[in-house]
Length: 358
Image (cartoon, rainbow, N blue to C red; front, side, top):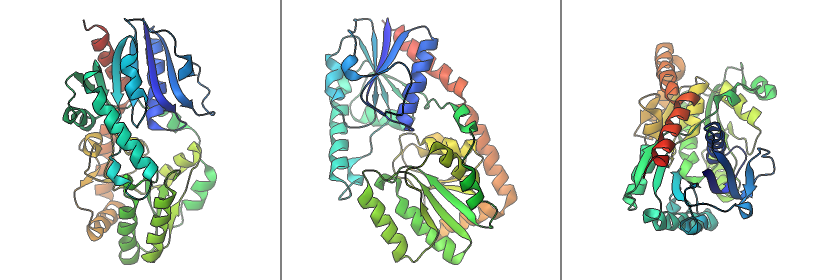
C-alpha cells in the first residue's frame, strides 16, 4: 500500500508545505511507500521524494491519497477521479472578502478554493484538520465524514539554528521595546490594526519603541503600500517592514522581540504563535478564528482592539516582571502540547484510524 500526498505547491518556508514534508518523513518511518506530488515545487527544496504532479504513479484501490488543502486549486476536482482512498488535511482558506480591492487575483483564487472545498464535501473519506476551528468550518460546508483534529507538525530543531547576528546587534540593547508580528503581509492579518495600536503606544506610552512586521508582501503589494501610507498618515516612525527575509533573520527577530502582538482576523492555526512560545516571547492576540485554539489558554487573549487598551496591555507586559513571567510560564506549558513527538504520535494515531477502517 502506498500513502501519497498531493498539493498544488510545495513552497519554501510555508507552514502547509513544512507540515507536508514533516508528515512524509513520519509516513516513511511507519514503513509505507510515500512521496509528495505537487503542481509547483520551489527550486530551493531539495528533499527526496517530492515530485511534479505529472509524475504521479498508478494508484491502487487500497492506496491512500492525502490532499493538503489550503487554497484554490483544480486538484479539488481531480482528487475524486483518482483511485484509492481519499483523505484531506485541511488548513483552511482565507475568506475572499478580506481581499476586497487589494487583489482581485487573491479574491478569485480563494473563492475558487471555497467552491472546491464544498465540491469535495461528499467525495472525501476522512479529514484531518489542524484546529477545531478548521473542522467546524468543514462541518458548516456539509462535511459528514469522520474528522480527526491534530496540530501542525513542527520540527523545533530548526529553531535551534544560528540567528542572523547583524539583526540582533542592530535591534538589541538600545533601550527600545521591540513589538513583533510574524506573518505574510495580507489583509486578513490586519497589520493596519497593529500600526494603529502601535501609534498610540509610541506617542503616549513609550517613545522608545518600534513595530517590526516580519513578512513577505508578494502578491499583496497594494495592501502593503496602503499600510505604509497609513503609518505616514498617523505620523508614526519606527514601523519596520522586513519584506522577504532568510530563516536566520526570522529567528533573529523572535530573539529580539519583547512582545508578540497579533491582530489577525483569520487563521487556520497560526504557527507564529507557537514560534513565539518557543522563543519565550509573551503574546497578546486578538481572539479570532483558530487563535484561541492554538493559544489554549496561554498568552493574553483579547476581544477588544482599542489602541488605548492594547497599549496599556503592552506596557504592563513589558514592565510588570511578575505578569511577564506568568504569561511566559503559561506559554511554556502550552508549548508542550506541540512537542514534535507528541504531535507525531497524534498524526500516527489519526492515520492508523483511517488505515484500519473498513
